[in-house]
Length: 494
Image (cartoon, rainbow, N blue to C red; front, top):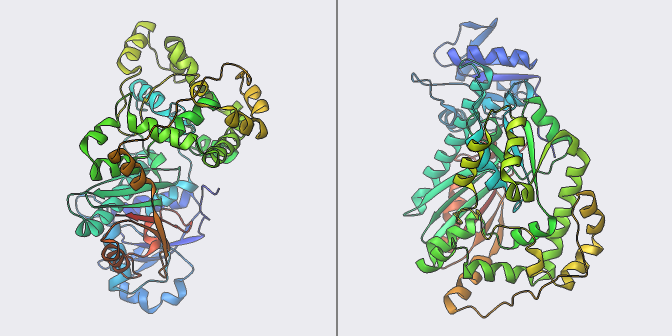
């Protein structure tokens, strides 16, 4: 995994105004030089001893600059980014399609910043991340960072990039889908996920490059594999890393019962309301059958167990560099554990205040996103059979559990797991529709992607997406906030 792009030796600034004058200071800090400056209003003037070119002059001499990326730095009179408008102008109006284009936020990879021990939450899905993040959000006090600091500037740039990217995709896809809404949220340190849903379909794009971790306001949470590179990344920003851990066998059960936002949206939009409402009940029939249908398949269970094992081995290799929070401790002795978290964050809270916080957040009913569905520990005994335990033994879970200080009596206390009952027609249809996907691989000169298709209108929507994803309309490289080639995945589900 490469969390940084390759630092360019020199760059081209497109748009020379107040922002460019501030931005060039941080280019100097990163030891990145100016290869050229382009501005339609200031051409002929000098900027940092470099003559500013008009776009036409740049085009005439473009061969001299092909090795250097373009950074659109224009902003309007209200100091709002013009990044995507400039990208459109550069590519479509001036026909400059063979240059790499970087969002200004790319520079965060190459300068030092101080986030003053701002917490970051890392943990495998199903480990209790949402509960812990809710606690941190209520405890965390935004650091007193100067309004004019580079931390504030790059926080703003990162938020603008994600907002503009979402707005661009909304404008592109909403024309094909009625009654829809969209979301964009982080999937890793360097990527975000975009999804728009409607009654008759859904489009999802994963792997869009951005910098969600730069936010000063929000507690950043990721499922990123915790290795030395990730630790060093957050150390460079002076973040405090919290790693959530839980009994690995309980994590496997929790993952089995998880529904992704994509799957929840499919049910919300396309199936009976009572089934959608059922999703958020602690005794949800749909979730119960969903989890059992997965756990009943060893060919589903074993790959997940391998992924979790490798994830936790990575954690063990760097655990001395993070603050570990155990789910079991947080839920059985919340006051003491939250007090220790406050000490790590240098937050002064009395035990009475912490007790009030736990009463507020504790275990609440499930909400969208899979939060708090049947919380607890030791759940694996309710669902695992000898077949599951044989797989775990084969994968070396004995040693892993010992290193993590978790005990398991492999031969006792395995209860009879609940059986999968025959669901009614609506439930069976729901589970089949959400799981049944056909994938079609498509490629354009700039934008390879895969298309997941269901339903009668698939050919019409596929044609619309083919028309939209073209080199002139939406080239891949304008999506990237770094110079790592972006390879987004488009999953279109009808």
